[in-house]
Structures are given as structure tokens and as C-alpha cells.
Length: 435
Image (cartoon, rainbow, N blue to C red):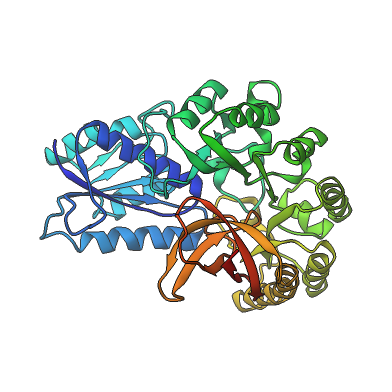
């Protein structure tokens, strides 16, 4: 089956890694990959199902792809979280899809397509027992790569579908991760991702996250390591020391908190409380003064009062996070919060999101303004043709979710670091010139 394949990958960076494994399976079969969907004979839509909006986006992408029929397009494969959780609903309704695959069904792709080309519609979700670690075809720039260290989740947050999509927490054996990291080749920035990176190894009997970081750091091809999705209750003194003392680990920590107020945190099924969160932030900054802390919050959780929303704004001003993301609560079926009383109107949730962003914008602007007149190390990522300058990221900016550094230079090489003197700043970005 020597077909031309294209892919649309939606959702998080963990989903991106799953999509790269599918691309690797396609390459292993000797098939051509294309970014031009009008040329593709088989299009794969790698879906997200975390929120209703993500499910709608996934279905819209399938319908849009279906518009290529009559041209080169012959088959549509829908994979990822949407079919994994909702195959019983999706398969009979979304007839535009010829094949459905789950999150672990990489090796089922070609057998399912053979059946589809024989005239069947194929639901192959869950036909592969264990996720396979085959070759990946990277969809990121050569200098930036992701390493998914586990799948699934131990937690049972009342707003979240992930455990019912991805199952229980499953760490990837360390030897497999090290082999995969070596195979990624020269990497300026390796981003460790999972639903909860800080729980790595606990399903094998003991937490082994710090040991994993140490072993990855020994690889000559890995220059810097960025840590995402570190749950606050598992940030140990050992981990703090590793971030502080390991020169390869960027002084950046993503800590999903979701709220600050004790009552709401308890309703969410989250561990910790406001006082513990503030104590953790204080400890982190005492040990690593230049640590950039990113977090996310949910606004408008069921029964959240105006006073609790205002208190969350106050928490932002007290904690002074480097970067934040804010989301309106999404009422998801099959979650505990779906049945809670006190569901909040959409316009109120959006109003609270705007208030949180307004509070954080002042904090972020002040943080960035402190860099004006200073020189920062920037990883060059290319040229912004609209701004007519180079663009890159400092250590306190993760790809795709934080701001950027825009700078002028006679020459800068993508994937290499350069010193940039900061001339001005705004709410999210820095602007300067190569020093």
C-alpha cells in the first residue's frame, strides 16, 4: 500500500508525540508524507477530546478533510482521544471517517486501512494492547523535541476526562526513554511531558523522576531540558535541588494549580490548598531565585462565588507567576463536576477569565520590564516576516504557550543561542537587538 499520507494533529504536545509515532509507522511502510492535504490519498486526523470545544474542533477538521474527496483523497483515519473515549458514538455518526484508531493503536493502522480499501468501515480502537515505541517522524523544528515519559493519570480531578480516555498512570520504562532520547539526535531543548511528570515511576513502585532527569542529562545530544506538568504536591526537595544544580535543566517549572481557594480546590479533587501553594512558591524562589513559574487556572467552576473569583485574582498578585493560562470551566459529561449544583452561566465564566487575564497582564508586564536594558540568552527560532526581525525564546518562555523575544541582527542561526540586548517590552514579549 504505497499511498501518500497527510496528517492534522490537534490538542496537546502529548498528542503530538502520538501523532509522530503514527508518522513513523507510515515511514516504516515506505509511504510518502505530505503537508499538502490536497495531495494526500490518506488523511489522518489526530484528535483531542479533553473539552467539548476540542471535540467540536476535531469533528470540524474531519468534515473539512472530507471536502478533499473527489480529488486525491481516498480514506480518512480518525485517531487519538476522540475515538478512544467516544468510539461508540463517533463510529456510527461520523461516517466521513473510514477508520477509527485509539491512542495506542499505531500498529493497527495498515491492517485497518487494508480492510478499508476492501470496502469496510473499520473501528480498530483498542485493538493494540500496549503503546509501541517505534520510530517517530518529528513535527517540531530540529532543535525542539518532546519526550512523553508516561501516559494516563493517577488523579481523579472532578473536571477532567483524561483518566477515562488514557487510563491509569503508566510510566514508560527508563531504558526505553533513554533510547528514544538518544534517537532524537542533536536537541537544543528537550521538553519532558506527561499528564503529571512528577509522578514518573510511581506505578513501578517508587518515584524515579529525578533519576530520569539525571540520566537524560548524561546524553551528549541533549543540551537543555524543560519540565512541564509538574504537580505541586509532588515537587520534592530532591527535584528542587536537581533543577537548581543541574546545568542542563532550565530554570522553568510548569505547575498546574487550577485554583487558589480551598473550597474550590476540594470540589475539584485537587491536593493542596492556598497556604501550601504559597509556601511552595516561596520555597522554590528561595532555592532558585531566577525560577520562572508557569501555571493554569480554571474560572467559573461550579458554585464558585464572586468573592472566590476575586480571591483568585488576589492570589495572582501575591504569587506573581511568570506566565499563566486561564480557561473557563467546561462542563464535561462523565465527570464528577458535571453533576454539581451551581453551574455558572457562560457569560459569567468569560467575564471572570477576562478579569484574571487583566490581573496577570500587569504582573507579566512588570516581570518583562525588568529585562529592559539587560542582555538575555535567546534560542533563535526563525524570522518573523511581519515584524521583519528574528524571533526566539528565553529560558522563561516555553514554545507555543508563552511569549517570544523579537530581535534584529545581521545574522542569527535557527536552533542556536545568541545574546540579545533588550530594548523594550510589552505584556508578553521582549524586543531587542543582538548584542
